[in-house]
Image (tube, rainbow, N blue to C red; front, top):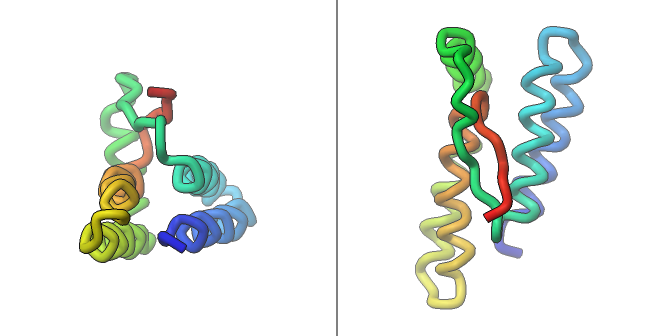
Length: 114
């Protein structure tokens, strides 16, 4: 209804497809993490873990963006803009704007309770 189920389904299907290969398993787990976050965005926040894996996380995030995840961020931006056109849709639109960061650079992020 507000784009969350469609986005979560896309992340879960993408995660299953990525987990078919050994190389794609870390990216598949990220898809599952984002898909669960999309289904329940209220009350959850993505924060940096603060790990010291700087270059590896940067490489994983660059690979993530190059595998087509830029389209997911653009879809969250589109849903957010459309939903913010109405007063009732503003809270849902703001949640889509929050999901843009996680959909672009998920490595090194942890989903926590508010």
